[in-house]
Image (cartoon, rainbow, N blue to C red):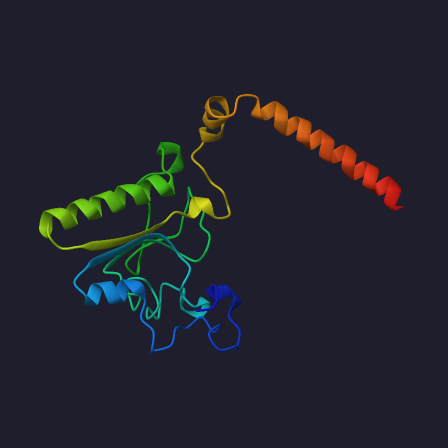
Length: 181
């Protein structure tokens, strides 16, 4: 695929459907003896196949080659109230954001449990995990309070610098408007 599925065109390689002559990495690994799992963002499903009704040909646990999938279909998801799937089945988070839910923590717990299960059931079998947290993509939903902690620990004075930069940007913008008119 030449791009994400949402920008599909009629151009060769940009239709959001891989040709039959290609195989997803997970399928190739599975066919060569690996256990495979994907957690998080799946941005490889053609838009017309993203419904819970399927078809599931391009879903990770459908034709994508992953034996296990836990995550969301598409490029973005709310990190506190995500639309989640386990395999191709819609699932609800086990707790609310008020009870401490955040998608990245949930995915991490699921991935660690899956890896532990693989090691227990088949200790010598290789496995492949694709872990794609949505928090690195828009919208940027980090757990509540993390920004304040990072600001105090990593960049003391970050708040003052941000205010100074914003003030400078407003002055520069006003100056540009005056000279451009």
